[in-house]
Image (cartoon, rainbow, N blue to C red; front, side):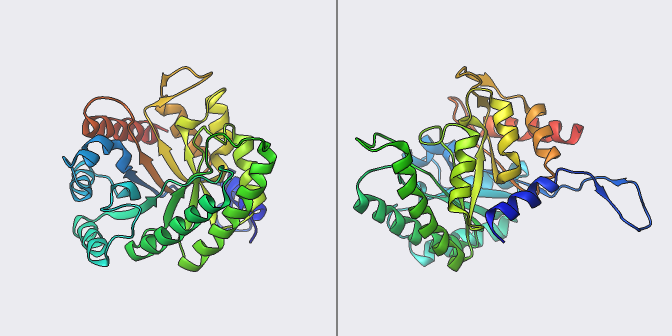
Amino acid sequence: MNYQRRKVIKRMAALPFFVIGGINNGVLPKKHRISYSVNAYSFNSELRAGKMTLFDMMEFAAEIGLNAVDLTGYYFPDYPEVPSDAYLFKLKRKALELGLDISWTGVRNNFAVTDADSRQKDIQLITNWLTISAKLGSPFMRIFAGKGSYGQHTKDEVKAWMVNDLKTCAAIAEKQGVLLGLQHHNDFLYTSDEVIDLLESVDSTWLGLNLDIGSLHGNTYAEIEKLAPYADYWFIKEYVYPDGIKTKVDMDKIAKIISNTGYKGYISFESLSDGKPKELVAQMFNDFKVAFERL
């Protein structure tokens, strides 16, 4: 199944379903299978300062009723080096004890740079962490497109080598059985059309989309709605940036967009604000659930 075919199936999920020739000829209600997670970056300061560990984060997630955790690679010992199996399996055992999924891992790569050797090192980084993801039982791994200046090259030229790099990574992801999730990060990819174009150019069922609501500026909610049928994972943040203006997210609007696509999967919360991250994440989780259940 190619990317275009998968896109059509996702869009069909937003349509009413009719039983043809069955007992009920009416519209059946959509069923959602939503699971909730938290991204480790919410605790960036605490994790980097050694005031919190990934194990502490798991305890918090279980305590407030989340289903999963996003274990970003930056917070593993000696990142970007590969952690020991003993450490990975300790995390895996902890998640099992708490009834949590390890739904996500992520690394920081940059395929926009002009230096081919640097990009090759990032392909190896992604390869290494796909292996780690598989060992943890994580079905999804976040990567970026890239950012920065690319000298005399045009954006189309950068896109050409980026597509090749992403195709290489997607083929490796398929062998590991871990879906790569491209997170548009308001750096190389600024609009929903740019994101869709890149995904369709790679055209792999092993490169999906981590829809980050905080990285679509301009007509923000329209942009989010356009990308929604492509989402394999959602990042909910407490602020969005319509026309570049920092604005508290409207959870009712986000919940409605997600509901209308018939999305089934993980919704992860990430706080980037100053303050107490546990309280901020718990509030976002509660606000979204209330909005989603109100539909």
